[in-house]
Length: 349
Image 1 (cartoon, rainbow, N blue to C red):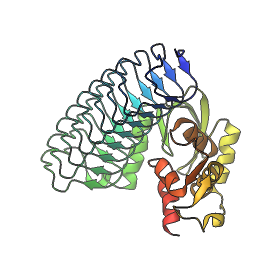
Image 2 (cartoon, rainbow, N blue to C red):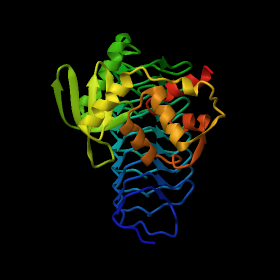
Image 3 (cartoon, one colour):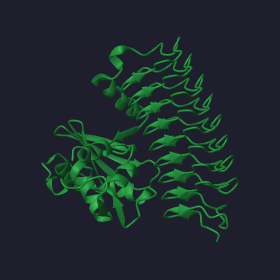
């Protein structure tokens, strides 16, 4: 089967199909364990996640610039696979992978960056901002992050040779763990007041704003415009990897998204309201629930807005089943807004 330039939905890679004309995939792309060399010569955008665990992707994505969701390439040979990639909206997981030279143009990761045990030498020469945590425990990261200024979550570089690795790093929003690491000269710009403090977390948000991005509830968006009315900020945005303009309301550090301004306002009221969670008090991580119950319970427990939840369901692999366990929902939403709150609710049971 030969595919058109734009694929509206999700794609599970099939070696018998012809993807040579595809320029945009608006859902997720799953090519786990496949040899995809030369398969996507013109692909520039994946709206959802890109899953290539254990795949042979060398040279597979020469024109890819944007992944709207997560990029999972754990255990893959990704050398030279992403020469034009600049933005990953969600997390980037390359645990144990050989990623030398894989991300020469990557500047922004909206979620966490997990490269523990990977050979990352010179892998991220342009990377400036990571919205979540950065875990490079046990990795060879010498010279890997010459321009990185901001890590939104914690930074774990324990048991790592970090000598000269973070010359421009000024802000870490969470903890800093470098036990057993050689950190001589590693953090010349980083100060105590900009590590795991409220001030540090404000600087994280500003770092994205300075690039024209809004990072809110784990969703990375390009700002079209922002206006303020009565203490409420109204952002018109385009979520990374998507094409439609949507809205995000911001007030007192609380965000809410909607396809329309009315929907964003209604979701904001819902998020700050006192939601009744009692109907889930008997559930455990083993409880089997329907897809509808999974979505409903996640929104009630975490306050996740309707638009953000819908976008996640439409663009992430594994969300199209009819039935889940609560534990599966927790695993699927790892790294997303509300995941820790949802997981914590059931740990208390």
